[in-house]
Image 1 (cartoon, rainbow, N blue to C red):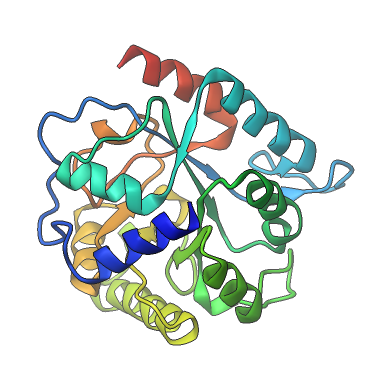
Image 2 (image 1 turned 90 degrees about the vertical axis):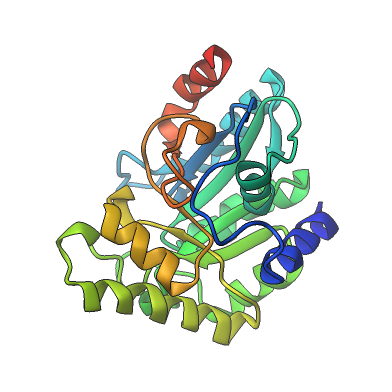
Length: 252
């Protein structure tokens, strides 16, 4: 999986996968579930939020998906599928994570590493290494994950604005361009994917993402990825909806 993921990234960086068009390939027959997680917290964590996932819950969700027949794919695999129609295995599931929490590094990534499951972490670069509130991974930890090749490190803007739709065009551009530059400077590879903070976006957000040089962007609209309106508005389910996501995919 690591070698395949690296190859996908290199092909993307070379511009070989149709990045000039926001359209989806015709005739897509798969029904891919994209899930987004936030913090992975200890089972006895006292200040849980509704979207947190405990270590045990995380293991149970992965176990449930594997038992149901899920085949885990990477974000580059998903991109290639959506833009070129490249085939996917049956019951494809793509795992993403938001907000760069240290809990992923400590509790989530070891589970995925043991099972060889790819994932992507979307980072708001202005807070890398911050100890304020819940601690964030630092650049050394992000470099380690990136170099190991199983977890992609991608953009979630610089400051994680509450709602991109309310921002001026210059501010919107700055959030996307600077985040991309930060990631590329520290990780020494192209940053190609974006997740809109809180899943909130509009046409201007899509245009800003494309103008900044990303090739695909994610929302939090609850539907399989192939039913997304375009490559800059790819749908994801919050992980708490994983059973609903599975049912939706089976119906498609």
